[in-house]
Image (cartoon, rainbow, N blue to C red; front, side):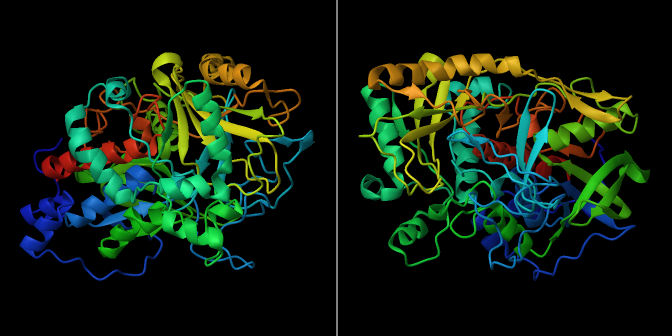
Length: 539
């Protein structure tokens, strides 16, 4: 890194203490936020201190802590702001009735469950910059959130910290003591993590499906665990008695949640904007980041309309750039910029170490005396832990069809060893991923250590109607893309990209393919760790 950073990105001692997130430091030093200003799209020719590419977990952490440290930040988001209701009065559409808001620039939905009771469930929709991107590569479909808040808009919000014993395999170059003592607690606090009331869980109609999952797990001697979440559980209890608009109990999850879920819009990003130092440009896509004069960088940014068309191309100068476009977005951009010579100093690790977090889905057909309920909360709250013995952690997931299905549904995270690589196809002019569908077989085998056992004990069978015709396993997708710019390989141990001082990766691309659990708390905690060091040493 440069010994003399530009004056515009230097941070005072006051700013550093604020950047650590210390409320005591803020009060003692009388650091005040500037009034929040209305965010305008970034202008052509703008000169910004810090440009953050993406508004997901890592980018939101970076923006907040930098702003608290006195640095002005501009965030660029390819998706929409998702702050304006549609004609139905709702910002997000329902999972059971996807409309133009559901998918990113598709003309037909591509639901993770493609069939139900022998019928295809996908439907035609208008092309629009919707909230869920089903990005297809040769061997896998990667689901990603599109909008201000990134993946926090579309995930189930299961806020799981890896078991301490597994952490060395997740991030081998990171000190676990500091993560578990400082950064995981800081991330959980910032995200608003909490747990379901266990007494309410026992009687709530909307969690009958989870209680059935618990009974079957325990009868087969599998550990059953409750999992924290970022949903407002008090709100959900009010949903159940009908005193507030239904959200989780209306099946709102895959295409956004209108009320109870604490997405980044309500947590890190709300705090960041309140500092008055953070601006966000939705429907803007960064296509290039190149070295400029004086140690700064020149970014080329396309402004989009809601049909995906480019309405303007802007050139912006930034003192420092944080790549936070998600594992796929960050990796694709860096691989292309390296291959085309724009960022020739990046090392050979760019694009490597990508994994699917071992995701695989399945359903089980239960007996008629084991109904799972016609009302199912879209927010999961528990799982089956067979990681040590079988390499799988299975989320007891909802199947919120609105009818009784007598089915249990699961998303498994497994210890899949396979890692793919992003590469530049010069002839096609695009980045490709060399994942192979056959690489899902270890995930299937690990998930079977749970569900074969349960089926044998219960006398039940797998559902064969959810992922196609006579297809048991949802082995075609991932919700949890990780890797592509791995920590301490493509970057140093704090996310600084090799060869280009002032460029950083601060999202899930840093994590080599697997977190053993749902990954967003680890992404957030790692970002908290890294930005604290970067503020202290680089600014």
